[in-house]
Image (tube, rainbow, N blue to C red):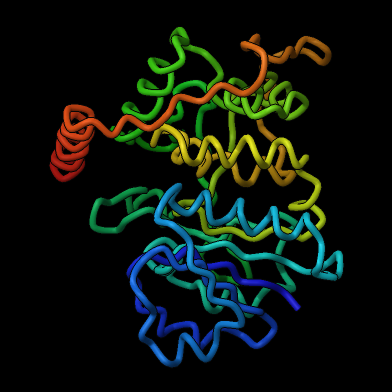
Length: 300
């Protein structure tokens, strides 16, 4: 049997009643008590968690439990990860679950970010159908490992992400953010692979699936470091959203170096993460930038 892992905060989860029977549902609840009786009846496990680390902490907690054993899972079984409302990013989500036999070992399951923000633009969504699964809408986003921006359109929101990451770590413009982050998490081989390439792929809203052996293959120390990152500065959550598919085996694209030239970025000994800045001035700066990005996108 496959697993469906839901990171829930305030969503009603009524839709769980329509999840195909091949999926065992695990709900990690970081909000108020779930009142939907149909959701409670369909979920095999409801686990209360502190409201910290966003969906990244939820996913990593579940993967750590898989690694710890206690669950005998066939190698061809999948674990699907999604937030409490996957349909904003994946309007065909339930039908995609039923189409699991057509999935790749690491399978993105989202199609867009938000329609009301026109991200990705409707023109891009209409043209790029190569990632569809059995005719169902799936579109992994190609993005630069240096500037963190998508290739096919201008996303002003990514400016904050890459600028913030570089500032908190003192990195020059043009640094490979993916390589730095993965090295900081104690994953040197994957960091070297990222350093040798220019492009990555991600699934909007962190909605994706992977076979169990790919999840449990991540070193335990790496999982622990990734979790510390999820609990740290808010920028790490956005970095993780773009790293999930690669953490579990999807290859980076467009080689930038010749074989053997890639090197793990130099870092201080051991993982070093910037803690979350919860001061009022920091929060005001973030909120101001988010509002500004929203206005800029709305004008587009």
